[in-house]
Image 1: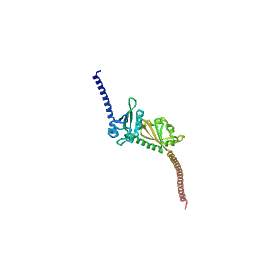
Image 2: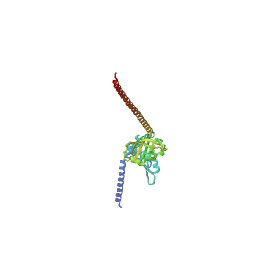
Image 3: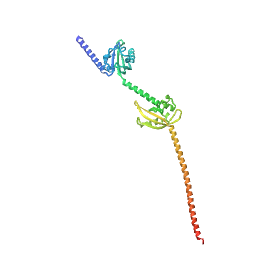
Image 4: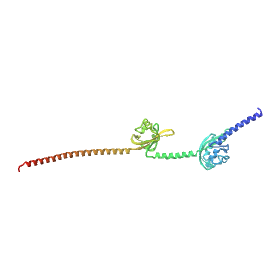
Length: 321
């Protein structure tokens, strides 16, 4: 092969190398995530524009720094634990940590730390990609806080509360449900509907919900059976809804024993009152009948007296004077 051919081959290889380099540089420069690369001495020699945006400072304020030495403690305190792990194991490590950026912003960041390994298998630097997930983490914290408050509200509710799946099995309940039914939390989880409600087995449960709309509340009365077999009349406020595509049902259960007893007492009072009215009405009718007979007798006697007076008058007129 001539020298001119060698030069041409080398130029071709260089062109290919330059093309590949430009391709990857374009990817790095346009990536939305932050990316920086360190050498075997942990000095950052490259940072992309995405890293500038996350850090809040120009990239030349990032490059040239030793990762393990030149950044404030609040910036690298949690981060370095993962960095050292990746460095020591020579394996990629996923991280999610709190970081105070060089610009002073408190953030949550995550990503991969991928060790660079030389031909002898030694550490040769680190490629770190960084994503700012502050908004997502803050939202999660708010949800967790909200969930915690909600759970506390549920646990301290005076009514029993159940969450059931499509198979009519209890997947969650509050302490009042356990207390009122006589079960421990472990015992009540997984309990089937027919062990709780006298009027529902799984088929009736499914039939009841078959045509019901999601997120519509229904009020029903039923009878719950405690662990020791006691029957409790209850009012159930219940709803069908979805969580991540799965159908669930919740019920807020109120013991209406006192209400039922009050209704029974009122019903008994009403019946007694009706019976008393009937008795008094019958007595009144009897008195009226007696009065009617007396009136008839009185009228008849008056009529007879008048008749006798007329006869006496006639007889008196017939007597000669």
